[in-house]
Length: 223
Image 1: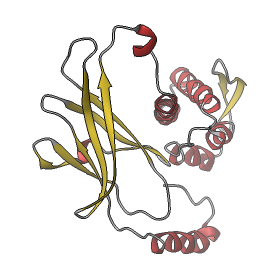
Image 2: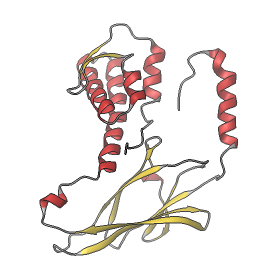
Image 3: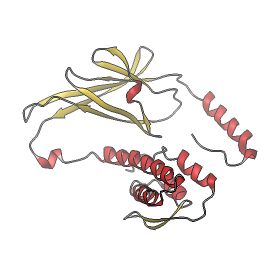
Image 4: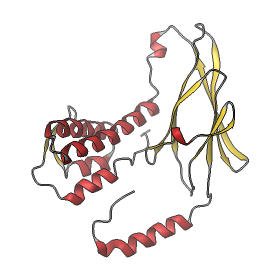
C-alpha cells in the first residue's frame, strides 16, 4: 500500500502495478504449519518485505496442521516469524516444535524444522536470534508510527511525540532508511539513539499519509 501524491502520476503508477501483477508466477501459496499435540501457535507473521499478520487466516488441514494463505508470488523472497508455545518438559529434553512448509496447491516446495531444547543455562535461554530481534523491532516500528500519527490526529501531542520518538529510535537501530527519511518530514529528530524528537509545527498532509502507508514496509536483516 502506498499513496500517489500527484494525480499526474496515476497513469505511470497504474502501469507499474499491472506490470508487477502480470509478473506473478504463482497465484497462491500457503504456509503450512504443523505443531505437536498440546502445542499452540501464538502468531504467524510475514515480516519482510512488509509486516502482515496471518495468524487469524489459518485454515485447518488436519488437527495439527494449519495452512496460512500468503497470496501470489513473483521472483521474490519473503521472511516469516512464527511463535509456538509448548508444554513444559525436563531440562535437557528436545522436541520438534513445528514443521513449516511452503506449498502451492498440493505440492510442497520446501520445508523447515523448528526444534526446541529445554535448558537451565541462562546464557542460552536469554539469547535472541539476530533475525528475530531485527524483525521484532520492525514490527514495533510499524505500530509506533501508526499509534503516533493517530495520537497526533486527535491533538494528543505528548503521546504522538513519545510514539514517533520511539519510531525514530527503532528506524535508525534497524537500518530502515526509508522510514527514517519519512519520519524526518513529520518530526525533528534531535537524538535518534534516545528517541528525542519534536513534532514539526507545519506538516504536509501527504507526508503524513506517506509515512503511514509505508509504515509496514521492512528492511531485510543486514549481514
